[in-house]
Length: 161
Image 1: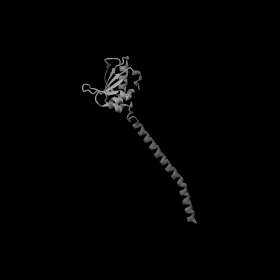
Image 2: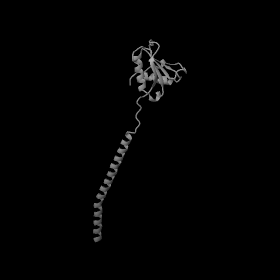
Image 3: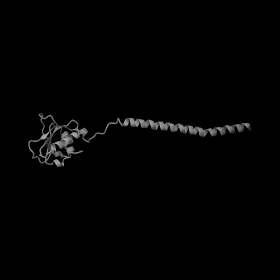
Image 4: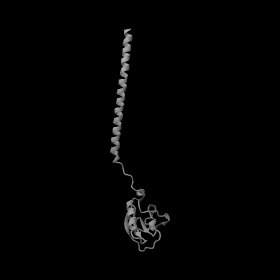
């Protein structure tokens, strides 16, 4: 009988110890979760400042290293400066901006100077100029990619971000 009683006592003690073991296990799991969250938060915030910034403009990749001249062929005061500022804000290299020899051009025209019409067409899309107003006049005398002749339709051009 004593052995049965001893076994019952041992069983009772073991059952009483199980909740403590469960509590210790849960405590350990909670500590691991807290540490995991802390380290992931530290990792996230340490990388946050090192991320590459988004490209500022939608045309950057397609217009990189395009050199243009902007010529006022409409006579509207400030047209050349407005277009030049817009292009430069979109990472276009405006190498020259001045008046054209006359001010009677009705529609804006883009002239491809190198045979790479894609560059002129990208600029045309930026300015909202139809592609049928992009022409090619290839000349080795020009050290630029595109000439923009601003016409009297200047107010219809996209010249702000």
